[in-house]
Length: 368
Image (cartoon, rainbow, N blue to C red):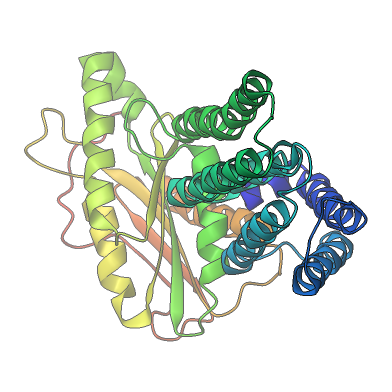
C-alpha cells in the first residue's frame, strides 16, 4: 500500500491526515483536564497530560519524517489504541464522554484497514468495542438518570461507524487488489504482462544488490509464429503460447519473473548465484521447444547478464536498460536465423560474453 500511495503522490496527504488525528486527540486530552467531570486523581491527570503531549509530539513528527516501516506503524497503532483507551476511560465521568472520545476510533480504524492486515483490524475493533462498553457501563452506573433511548441511539450509530467503515473499506480494498492483480496479468497465459513485469522487476532489482548475485534478463521471441497462426489457426497459436508460458514459469526459480510482453514475445528475469547462470539460461531457452507439442516451436533468445551493481540508483531506469540490452541480444539471435541463444554479460568474468546456439536444442523447420 505505501508504494501504491507513493505512485499517486498520496503519502503527504496521509501523513498530514494522521498528524491531524494526533493533534485532535491531544486537544481532546487537554480539554478534559479543564472539565469538572474529567480525571479525578493527580495520577489520572498526569497520565492524560503525558498522552496529550505525546499526541502533539506525534502530530509534529508525522509530516516531517519518512514513511514508517511496518513495525514502526504497528508501534504507532499500539500507542494510539492505548492512548484512546486511557483517554476515554479517564474522562468517563463527563457527559456523553464515551460518544465524544470514541469517535476517534473511526479514523484510527481507517488507518489500520488501509495499511495493515485483517488481524490487526480485528484487534483494533476488539479494543474499540471493549472500551466503549466499559465506558458506557461506567456512565450508566455514575448517572442512573441518563436518557437511555437517546444514549442507545447514539451508541448504535457510533458502533456502526466504528465497525462498518473498516469492514466496507476492507472489502473494497480486496476488490481493488484483485482487479489490480488481474490488470498485471496476461489473460491468455496467466503470466505477468508488461505492466506487471515492470512493477515486480523493480522490486526484485531493489533487493538484488548483493555483489554475489547475478541478475539474468531474457527476451524470448518465438520463431515464425505468424506463419504458425496462418497455417494452423489461432487456436493452435494460443495453445503454443500457453504451453511455452507454462514451461518458462517452471524453468526459473520461484523468486524469478516470467511475462508475456505481447504477441509471441516473452521475458524472464531472475536473480541467481553466479555459478548457476549457465544452467538457468539453458533451462529458460530449452523450455520453449517440446517435441510433444501439437505444433513444436523454437525461439530466438537474447540474454543480458549483470554481475555487479546497477549503473543507476533509479531501478525503473535500470530495468529499462536491462530489457533493452536483452532485446538487442534477441535481435542478434533472430538475425542469425532463429533457434539461437545470444548471451552477453556485464562485469561477469564467471560467465563471460558468448554468442551461440545451444547444442542440445533440436533444430526444427522454421516457419517463413
